[in-house]
Amino acid sequence: MPKVMGASIHQYAWFILILVFCNIFNLIPEDIRSACKAIVGVVNKYWQGLTMAAIGISMTDFADFISVINLDTLAISVAVVVGAILATAVVGWIFGFFPVDSAVTAGLCMANRGGGGDIVVLGAANRMELMSYAAISSRIGGSIVLVIASVVFGILY
Image (cartoon, rainbow, N blue to C red):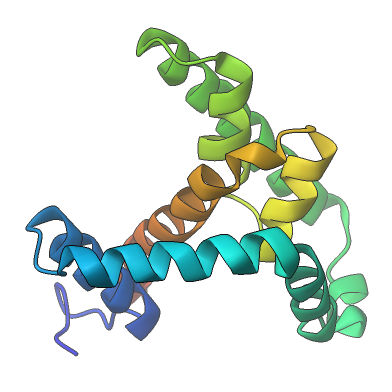
């Protein structure tokens, strides 16, 4: 894939960005989008919780996870969570959305560990009906973070 300002962008970020542009410019036929929506509906209804929990547990290296727990990591994590909550709640309120729903879906679901994290966040907030918004936030927000991090770290290192 092409480099941006000399930095390599992760392939997953390119994939999401290409799909977003295909959807914006209506390049995907309606029958294919409808079929995808139906399949996602079945998976969300019957398998999503179990699948995301299994993937989250199996993909986590708990030894590495425990090894990075320190005050620096805690401070950074708290700053990211508080910043994500406050910024998205205020912007959501400005645009006429419910601040709590904005903070949960746009903020916390963008800053978690993906689909498994979305289930944990939405389950704790008792807002599972917002899963489709959380999925969009995780994928697009995660792609944006990957692009920005790739460019910044490409320039710095």
